[in-house]
Image 1: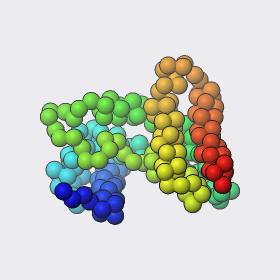
Image 2: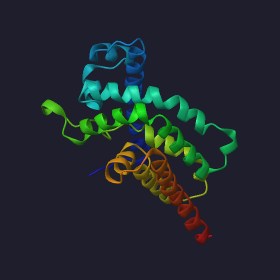
Image 3: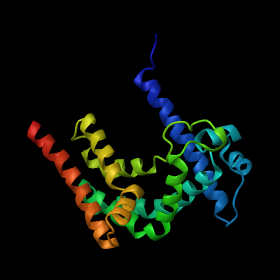
Image 4: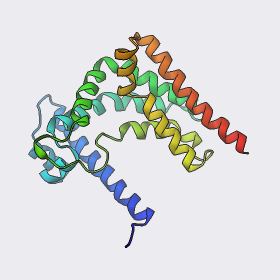
Length: 212
């Protein structure tokens, strides 16, 4: 029995991310004029087959929501995480990410609720399970960029655990829990999310310092 090397497995995962991004980017471009593109139009623009699109997005609605959410959030998030004043401040960068996402939540959270409904249930009409994670890796990429100052400080295991933990307290699911379960207003929601995220970042740093 043989197993793939980490390099080969990582290379395939990187290729999957590039393919998914190409599909989403094509949907964004085609949707910019206000019309709803078809699967065939998106496939042609992304230079992939219809089958490839359905491997990543079992439903066209899921792809269009992903594209819309990206077009809405990516520019302000990228700008916030590129602030030179926060270059060496991982906690500050995470704060900026939360603040920026919540500023756009009136437009993005309804998309998030629809996306969650589409991805928690099995694919429709007996379609195969999508390749890789069922949701976009956009959140992971933003968290990775926000925590970049810790990349060479924490061990790989500790760094990846931090990213996983932050995934649970930043994003649509956390917003829904804070609003629907806790009944928080927007400011209290931001305070709770920021406190939880900062606690995780500071705990990871303290654990590292104790080991030195």
